[in-house]
Each structure stands twice: as structure tokens, then as C-alpha cells.
Image 1 (cartoon, rainbow over the protein chains, first blue to last red):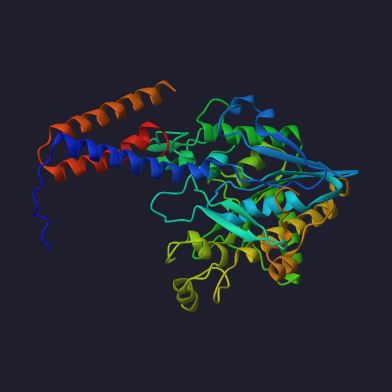
Image 2 (image 1 turned 90 degrees about the vertical axis):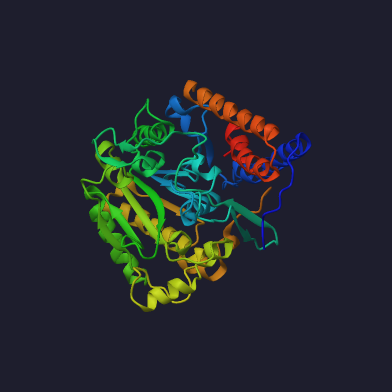
Length: 381
Length: 49
């Protein structure tokens, strides 16, 4: 087929093409702007809603500001922070936080939940990754709930340009320029830096002001990445993490323990431990929809983790998670949830005054049997 | 903030140059190429993508 057809260009064809480009841009804009709408959540009774800017005014009225939910039990105890959505392309992170937000009934201690840690990164997809924009769950009453599948990095419409080299302010560590938009390279943050760095600073102020005893930063990683189905612990968190790993092993949930490297800076498990009094723990589950070996990347892959390339890689012994046919999101949320519940239980063993007791949150068995959607609240309830 | 305004002004300038070229161009397919270039420029100018 030949493309040597010489149509004559006129002012009329130019006008029509400009209008066509405007129309295409309009349609494209609708698609991009769908992701600007925040996900809706239904907090369990007892949660108070705040905004992170209450702890640091430097992010007030900026897209970095994000909701913070706090529930106190009747009895005094420890304070636990669950941070989800540091990387919105790792869905078990935000969704585990949403599960605690919608189900938890505190008896002892306090629970702080930040489901959408980097709200700016939820407003777009990573370019060239073909990720789905949203994932949905069916609820028992027949309704459905939808959540965004965002990007690892802050949306460049909020923070640009990326420098050639990102220099971590506190350590001088040099990273690729794009990492300046990565919340988990921005800790402990700076009060006058770019938005992502200020967001990290706000999180640090919250941890200090609220005297958070135990802080979780939830993540997912590619199945071929060594730090997966793992907990990365600061040296002060190591004893507690070891106790939890043994408990989880007993119920058939192996948890790899990784010590937080002292020379890898900007991550929660290092900086929260060094700059605050909290015990930080970063946890990873295995997410085939963000791995390099994956095939078609769509909502089904995000929900089921089913991918023939990963099945083949598993048979060749190339993965760091047990993978037979799939790695469902229900299971990944179950891992995070069961691990957090066990951490809370063990925290009381380590220090009675920091005991945290809650009810209403399903464990691994319930989540894998009934699915995550079965535990969400219907919208409008 | 000022840097963003300068950036958007540059994007608008390039966008208008492309439109001007399209109206002066005599070959349809080169006009069509200009139209393709306009789409990301419009989205960038509006800070949508």
C-alpha cells in the first residue's frame, strides 16, 4: 500500500485539522482527568477525619495534602500508624489501609490510618506501563467499589522538572533525577523543598506529634525482586519483627525479614527510625502487575496476578514468592492485614503500656475465602 | 510557580507557531503531522498531562 497520495493542503484543511486536534485533546483530557477524582471511603464509626496539613501547614491547599483518620479505643495504649498508598501502583498497600479504616473498632490504644499517602501519585498512571486506571470489587449487596491504580511517582503536573540527579538532602546520596518524585526516597523530608519532600516532612511531624509507637509503610514489589513477601525493619524494630515472623510462620505465612540498610537513604524504614521515636516497618507483597515479566497489563492482572510468563518463571525458579498460577490481590491484602494484626498483638507483649487491641478486621483466612470486596462498606452506608 | 508560568508561556508560543505553520503549509499530510503535535501541546498547556 502506497502513502504517496498528495492531497493539497488549504486553509480550510488546516482549520479542520486544528479542530480535530482540539477534539482529540478534549477526549484525551477526559480520560486523564477521571483520575483526579479522589477514591471514596466509608470510615468505621469512631474514626475522626483530619488533613495531614494540620501537622504541617506547608502542604495546606496543595495537592500533597491527604486525609488522616484517627480512632481511639476506650482504654489507653499504644499508637499505630498505617500508611497506604506511598506508591499507588502497588494496590494492596492503599487497600489494606482502607480495610482497617472501614472495619476497625478500637478497644485499646489508637489507630491512625492514611490510606492515600501520596495523593498526587494517585492522579495519573506511569507512562508506558499500560496500567489500568481503576480496579473494582463486588460487594455482597451487589454494589461495587472502585479504586484508582495510580503511579509510583508524584504527578509531574504537580512537581516538575525532575533534576538530572536527585540529591537526598540529609545524606547527600545521589539517585536518578526521577526519584525526586518518589515519596519513599524523600523521607525524612524538608519543610521548604519540593511537594514530595514537604509531604514526607509532614508525615514525620505527624509521627512525632502523635507519639506513634509503631508505623507501617505498606508496599508491593515485583515477584522477581528479592525483597518481597518481606518486612524491612529498622534495627529498633528488629526484635518485634522477629517475634511477628515466628508467629506468622506458625500459621503458614512465611515473612522474610530484611534489615534496613544504613546507607540506603530516604526510605521510611531508615528515616522514620533515625528521625523519630517510632518503630518503623515497611512490608512488601508480590504484585505481578508491576513486574517486568508480565504480559497484558489490565484490571484482571491487578486483581488475580495470573500471568503465564510468571508461571513459567516460577517453574524455572526465578521468583522470590511461591507462585503457582496466580497471586490474587485478596491474598496480598490478607498478608498485609494478618501481618499488621500480629504486629499489634506482639507490641503488647513487648511493652504492656503500648498494647493495641481492635476488633472487626478480618484475617488472612477470611480475606482469601470471601474476598476483599466482602469486607468493604457499601457507599452511602 | 513563576517557572511554571514561563513554561506554559513557552508551550503556548510553540503551539501557536505550529498552528501558524499548519495554515501556511501546502501539503495536507504535513498539516496532519502538525495536528498530531498539537494534541500533547494542548494537554501540556492546560496542565492536564
